[in-house]
Length: 388
Image (tube, rainbow, N blue to C red; front, side, top):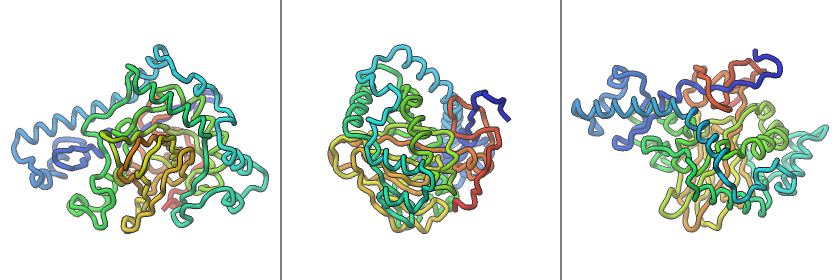
């Protein structure tokens, strides 16, 4: 147990460095632990995809080894970027770095938070304050930020994007989006590798800077402490405790927040995946755009649910709440630019028992900041069987 008063140390699961390595030219997500394992597990399908010569295989092996090493460095590199940004970056809208004020939040959201924290509040009463998108899938919508705050945050993000500050960008091996946005039947890869492996390929990257859609990680920009942490602790925690008690909603103790951008000539859509989170908040910040709707299936443990997606349109300032294990993606953008703030909400009481990425007991590795939300402590646990 941690010493009283000492800051909690968060970890990641070791699977982050060995699983779901995407090799674009062969169209495969691979698990890589050793050369022998790679040959044994993927030899036939690699040969069928064009990896036939010794030179081909050695090139692939070198790339995978480099990618594993790159992932192992990510935490330290992210911390270094954060330090450089803190010392050298000059914000365009410094007010967004002030501690979160009620004036930044939509009146409806303040009312929801007030009700959620009130004596006698319950789930049925809370639902009167929310828009239920799907009771079956437990997806809800609520206004979160005012229009003026969305505009100020967007201006700051665009200023940062134009700056010469370092940004956590992926390389080409790390586009985790599955190419077929919503397969009616298992695609070829799933037939050859099996549903279990295919569904692991549908996961969201265990570290969000591996997603090519990521514009900025909010903890690197310095917005975790003033914005995201109070949003989680003061407002989302009581709300999620009523909505998702079985998913650790009342035990949220860390998060990963980032902004994604979709625009013409850049990324326009996102394939089917699930999040490395117990719960997710997705807020549309702007700008003017058409298309790009979210689509949802069932939980990732139920592949039959892939056949009937539910589409949800973005509304600027409003947030969509859903379980992290809910399969989802984004339809192609039509026109304009779409910027979204995504907050992965994590409960170590849940994930300490079962890593949502490898679906095994986590093999913990110390990490920077909130890591991937695991701890070596043993908080009160949540029955993960209830999540399925």
